[in-house]
Length: 251
Image (cartoon, rainbow, N blue to C red; front, top):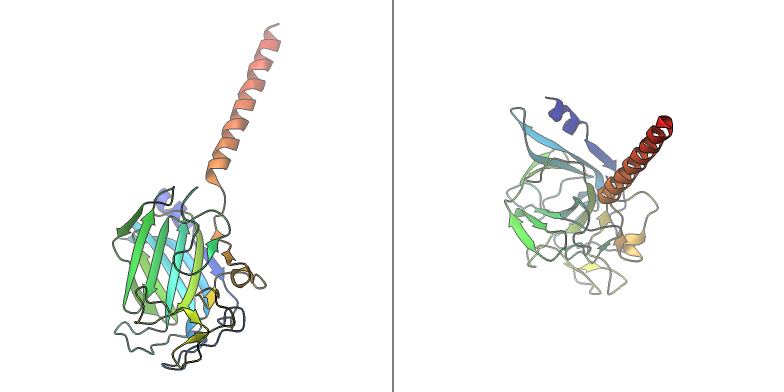
């Protein structure tokens, strides 16, 4: 019970500014099928342990959007966007945020969830970022204007990168890449190398994802390895002081 209480206490909720699902401000969304900015607009992200009958079974993520859109008529009830969640579980990992065109500004990811209205995936990499393993796909359901995602990620306190992109069934990853084209099905941008996401989880005013292609993590961004080394160093110092005092008193 105590462990469950501690894990529940690690609930993370991060808000995202509304009305910013246009990349650097110059993205033009597809007109065929029509996709609204609200259906791609991240509003908040939360993470907490998933519990079933008081047993912790993984992590539950909730991604709230401005609106739920279903332009491709998916049976799931949503198909406007692709939500990517990258999870930092420790030192190392991959710095490239899959095929989004973005890089992690600090550290690297160990788990990657991709959620679409036609299916979702979960993959894991090692600390070197070289090996990639496909895990059981997460389950996804709608709750109002939110996506509730249950994934086989060990319960814990992590750092996250979250992005929202336009969905298309015409690409292998389901993501519509930006282009300089002006066709009705195009995601138009003014740059050939523009990132794929139209919105990212970031504080208001942080536009570096669309200027230098890097995205900062949110959540538990501490370097646990450094903290452990610092704690051990502090303990060693205390033991040295204690031993010195003991020798001095004997004299």
